[in-house]
View 1 (tube, rainbow, N blue to C red):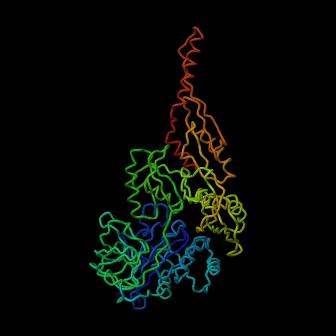
View 2 (cartoon, rainbow, N blue to C red; view 1 turned 90 degrees about the horizontal axis):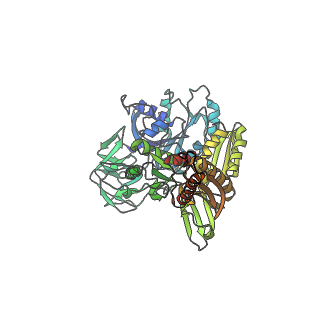
View 3 (tube, helix red, strand yellow; view 1 turned 60 degrees about the horizontal axis):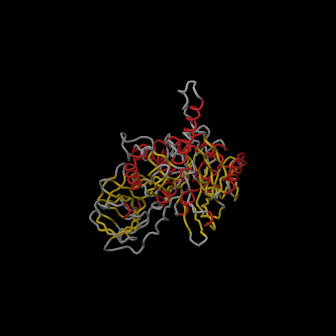
Length: 598
């Protein structure tokens, strides 16, 4: 039944919350791929956080069988995320497909991530089938949405499908379009094995489970395979296809999507984008592979209880095995103790890892404010990459600083353009372009420092535009910047957690705000506590938390006043000595509340 001409490999791409996972549910339901006892909403989203947040985080694959005009077709659906932080997952999934359903919400129209996913699919050379979803909503505007699609993707209006994934309306026309408009995969089953490794997960019992798409040849149990980039050879233990659960088969042939288990115990031994071939008869056509994913957002993760350090270490190791897109390394903070300095793809990716640590592993976490990485050219010619304020060199040694920039695309109602432009320019954005999808919707393009994006830009944009704006971004490299390091001193000791790298013209304002907030957050000590902000060796802001005075003369009733003076002088001397050698007690609650507010 697995004739190559009867196979369709496709993906569903959409802006977040446009009904992609719900449409997948209806396709699985219609084909009977999942029985009624396993069927539920968003059945492809298996992670607890995916279901809780209503978003797809990891790409997944599943095989359906659909009869059409007397022939049974094999439809391999590769479900991809919709959020901008997980674009790398989308690109990897698309590489295993020949076509994609481009889903657009009939009530919201074309959004920023719709454009981004469209461009990814076009770069991959996929055949696109536009689908207008949620036509059952009372505020849906089908004709307007079709016109918007035609603005970004030239296609006859009659080729644009309409459906309600929630109600199952017109699902048969979606299947018909998949079979008739998406091409079957190319490939030669008799040629040497050539398979793309497009994803991998780690199983504690079986080792690395490889997701692969075969271009040529075939693969079966017991075959010796070679990883072309590393030359490592493994013996295949099991091959199979994706139904609701992984299902073992005797072999996979050219054009098919499936999984491979070869007793690989170290996920470092596999590389996403790798070409898998036969050990004794290698292919001469390796795949181009994927760009290496690299972290763009950096943060420190520390256990609230120091006794949880080992548990945090083991939890990060397990998470990394199933999500090798984040990095972590041990870090010792004078303020927070032992923890890890981690790199993530974006702010949402960071929040997902943190929530999984707390919910799946029961570890309460303190996360420092997110940072980005900077390239610093020193006066001796050395280039240093810095991902946290504590790595920032002395100002006298710096020649130039380069910070990462993004190309930001914002889609919003035309009457709210002014608010979005004002916010973008306040955040050091440089205007690039403005275009209209239709008279009511505008696309703004800005170049923006990535550091401005990772904190609260998206939240502020939603607030300024009453929730109607959507955005997408892509990294465009690094540009020269005028930045300084802000150091916070508590009792003349630098507190690394509160340090920050800031534009020079914002440093003074930020210093005053930090010092003021800290002076109200840190509990009073038995001695006067100075809180200072230092920039380039100069103190630019200071506040003193007054001493907590103990009433040492409470028991002196009447008598000689010299006795009271003697006790007060003794207290004064003790406070001086304590201030000189004493340690400031900053409870974890201060760090948690302060960093959460940041």
